[in-house]
Image 1 (cartoon, rainbow, N blue to C red):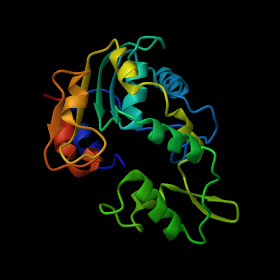
Image 2: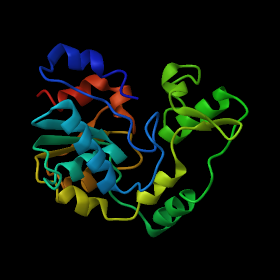
Image 3: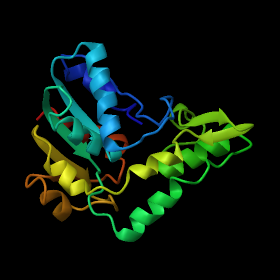
Amino acid sequence: MWRRLPPLVDESWDGRWAAPDLRGHGLSVAQPPYGYGIHAADMAELAAETGATRVTVLGHSFGGVVGAVLGSGWYGVPVDRVVAVGVKIDWTDDEVTRAAAMSTRPPQVFASSLEAADRHLKMAGLRDLVDPVDPVARAGTRVAHGGWIAALDPRAFGAVGPSVETILSRCAAPLRLSAGSGDPMVGLDAMRRVDPDAVLLEGAGHNAHWETPDAVWSLLTP
């Protein structure tokens, strides 16, 4: 899902970079627990493995919350700044309940990789933006249970519950929030409760890093 960023990174980023699949996503291990803290610990381990002494974090949606947790300073990784795009801040009790229910359901098994890829695109909000035959779509599938499943482990929805606003507010590193102007999950008012300088990215929805990669990258290279 970050495929449109590397060309921009290569043009203007002096240091090393990595775009990892989070735990329970893509090709990474599908193994609980899935709380924000364990994800941040995974990213801290990655930073140590790459020899990074300081890091800048660019995260999308769930990954933006993980970036803020990493930026708390609790993991021994010096974080210069965190840019979080499309983070859903306000959750209703019903939404939390539904996420908990989703975390207990077994993954839906499909007869073909194409059907699983379409399911992945729907879950990622990319169905109208990416063709199911695209490698980006196929990367979101796994072979399992005698068929194909979307790679996202449903148990990852169990991370929903703790106050996202509180988590973001505890980020010790400079934090910039942004979202697509058409993102149905978060608005400017909600973001500015945490970051008074939060910005909307015109012409983008929830997946701004796919729809307007230049605008997203500009948040790291003002």
